Image 1 (cartoon, rainbow, N blue to C red):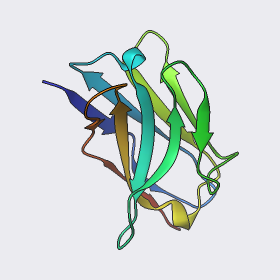
Image 2 (image 1 turned 45 degrees about the horizontal axis):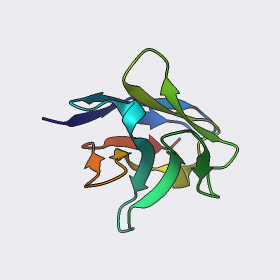
Image 3 (image 1 turned 90 degrees about the horizontal axis):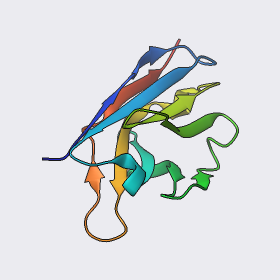
Image 4 (image 1 turned 30 degrees about the vertical axis):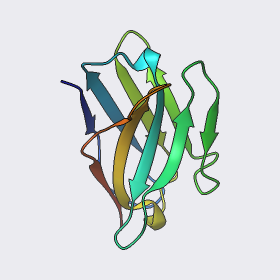
Length: 116
């Protein structure tokens, strides 16, 4: 059974930082492209950052220069480092594993709230 479990969300002040983690069981992340999405209340889920199976990253314009996606060496984990957080970054953040063929896997999400 495949499980993706996100952690690291929480409440942070504007300008602060958070590091989200996504741990996988049942799959090996190195076999997949990986991505972080987010969904704010009343809005559609949107791509935040993505890393291809063989490298190469892309980011939403709204987070470029502030967020970094990475695979954690030696662990079956993907991280999202979020710096200079803004109120508009408030959302539920989801981890996604994308195979070359077949259906993707999603985590259950972790809440990030940016507020003073």
